[in-house]
Amino acid sequence: MTSRVKIDVLDQLSETDAQAVHAVLDAATAADAVAPVSEQVLLAMGAAVPGGRHLVVREESGAVIGYAHTEDAEPEEQRTVVGAEAVIAPEHRGQGIGRELLEKITEGSTLARIWSHGDHPAARALGAQLGYRVVRELLQLRRPTNGLDGLPDPVLPEGVQLRTFRPGADDAAWLRVNSRAFSWHPEQGRMTQADLDARKAEPWFDPAGFFLAEADGEVIGFHWTKVHPEGHGEVYVVGVDPDRHGGGLGTALTLAGLRHLAGLGLPAVTLYVEADNAAALKVYHRLGFGQFAIDVVHEGPYPASAQH
Image 1 (spheres, rainbow, N blue to C red):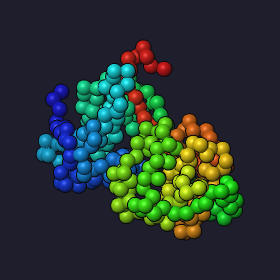
Image 2 (image 1 turned 30 degrees about the vertical axis):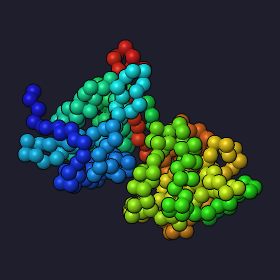
Image 3 (image 1 turned 60 degrees about the vertical axis):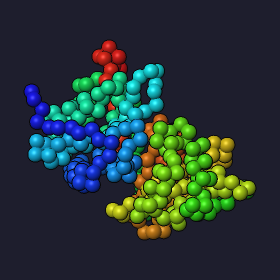
């Protein structure tokens, strides 16, 4: 069957295309009750993708009806690996366009890792048909701010002080401890000055909600909070230098940020955590967080003989 869509592979989106893609993302978010792409993709919408591409799906009329953001991963076992996030406009689903976009994403690669935000059932079904398997689960946890005043006060380890982030002056120190704290993490551990600058330029950025733990003049941990436009708070990221693990600093930082968010009168607080991070899950469950949603990564395609 001849395709009735065109998929443009671009280094950078024009302003017109970026606006059209945002309209598709908004429609998908309204239909699925979850954003189809991550914050990182939104921040890169108007820029070139280092080692990757923007894929724009168009109807014959030229109207944008789908989008994918791809990045080339580090070479693994001499394989070409690509990571991607993708979306098809709700009214154009069920017509094979998602499969066509996936084939374009994986063109020239031997392995792909595709995000499905909200673990969409259609993505599960398509992945299973094409030989993909789920290799990563990112949990979204949530709790109401009601009752946060009943949590214990933060108790910092001896010799540790808490203060707020100073844009510019603390950038290098934060990047250093973030890299150490998340050396194992495929996204957070790769944060650069440009990534930090992009977030500091966002309307939601507030250094008053960005807490640093310091000892002997050195930053050893942090809790960066975020307030979403729709009105809930987020434990955006909590990190502790590996040399300081086990002393209760992570819990103290989490409590400090939660109290800050509760003080803003927000109804609820969310956070994201890897499903296999047992230590973090133990802390968050103890603080009253429960699972709210899940994002997954589909990896493949694998031959039928390799499925398990």
